[in-house]
Length: 170
Ligand code: NI
Image (cartoon, rainbow, N blue to C red):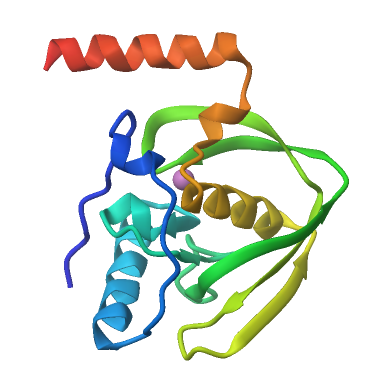
């Protein structure tokens, strides 16, 4: 199964809020599988459907994406941030839709998230580890927010300038 094409900044598609998924059918299962393949082959730890051209509220992520023994594709449909607590700096946060750029981002230290899994079962989880950052990053995507929106305007301008330059070269 091939990878899906990843939508990248500054494509406006990434900016729209996603819609709740109502029916977890066979097409959705296929999409989830392809999102997994896409995420692993791009060496990412998380991916939102909006990044592969689907405006539904679906995210996939994995705590051990680089370890073929431990890797397990987690899926959350219609996830919601119920509560968050504390503050920490993510180290070298990146995004498959924001190529060649990493930054430390101010994030909550712990999150409480609710959603449903790919079988439609309700999920409620608290995380205060690496996945707490991943969940915040992916749920941001579902609201049209990118991690570069959460860094200093100076750093963001430097990145934007680089992107514009590269687009001109093409
Ligand atoms: Ni991302």
